[in-house]
Image 1 (cartoon, rainbow, N blue to C red):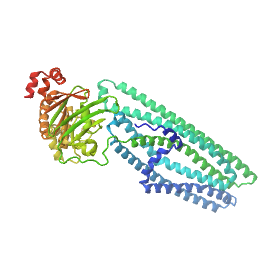
Image 2 (image 1 turned 180 degrees about the vertical axis):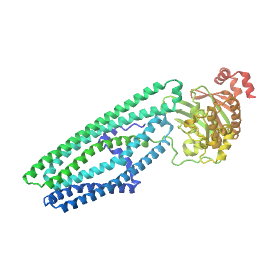
Image 3 (image 1 turned 180 degrees about the horizontal axis):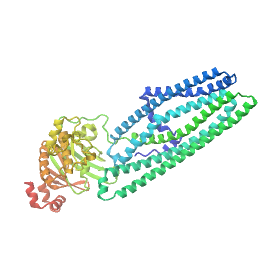
Image 4 (image 1 turned 30 degrees about the vertical axis):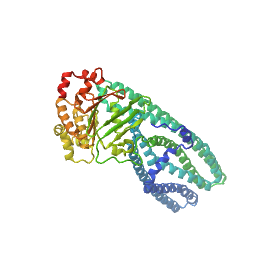
Length: 601
């Protein structure tokens, strides 16, 4: 994740709830709900504040005059006030809960949409489980604040301020005692609140680490089971959960201390006021009804301040969550379309050129994955890239798909620099069949149509037939509507590979990228799919990453890479004749000359 600026800690100290301000644009989108919640909140608070006045009048006038009818009238009025309070409270609850659900849905949508635009360099260091934690746990914390805590805070703020105002009107002398105690309560609240926020951030980060590991372990559960490492995974996750618990416990302990301190001071001041007021009643300086009214307002104010101390902790928790979400939203994609993109030629030709291209992954800036690559691929040409592991073959595909930009040099598609073209348009020129196929949960048809959303069922079936996948798909329980499970675990490796080939056929792009597209197939399926690929490759520019040299014998050209640069170039026949050459050595390791000659023919 992006590091926080050096001045961020000082900024957070000055404005501890500032991250929550980023939620305001979402609230502005729903002015009706905000207005309804605000009106309901004010009505509920105002109704509550009217109760002590009614109690004073009843005590001073009803009891002193023994007027039973007056008492009955006041009790009837109190019932009406209770009904109004109940209606306002119910309305407030509906509005704020609906608002919270709506806002958190929008936040999750926007954060996810933003994450999907981030460049590959971001995901090189970020953990997917940690991102999911921000999308779920942190947004839930925000929902709690928007949907409940914020309204409780405002309600108690109105009650507290209103009660203090009424206390001053009722008895200026007694209210001075309570007002004098407020700074003693508020200042520690702010100081403790900073500690609560820091502890909350640590707890949230620790929980995110545990979630990230759980996500990784669950997605690889078969590997853990195959190596009988279930106990190791359980122990590690238990340690992560325990660390998250300890962090949360420390945060809770800090909040508990804050709450206890605030409640003690608040109610101690109420006791002091009650004692002084009782003395005034005894001396006749104050009526019993006035003392009752003042006492009720003091209890309201004390309760409001005590509730605010708890709410303050909740707001600090939410501020930590908002800060983590803000960091994610502030992460800028490195790979973007230019402001004034150069249009790619139509119709597409499929010409590819690398001009002095060098590149180092952001996580390894001093280790260049490719160096000084300089070659041209003509439209319709089939070029294979061979070489030992780590030579930089897969990096070529990453650069062509503009998952990264070259450190030096440039890549041209039909004469246009990839960085000058609109990103979606540039990527639409490619279809890829990776070695490690990604199959999503959903139906077989959905997975094939992934290459071209909105494709008709007939187009999907035609692509599957061309990829030699139709027969096995039809044999599935629900045919093309069969659910394949998470990551397609119900399919064999060869079946997943053929679905990937069907995707490439359906995409119908001018440049085809094949990363050993038949590596997971048995001999019979490989022969059928190879035939389908040959048909697909006709008239298209094709770049093949070769791990097994038998799959590239008929390539127009073979580029041999080692340590990030091209060391040999030629056809299969010419390269095998080079004594001491890398390709010749690889060929001898994989098959004997007679087999090669027979296959080449």
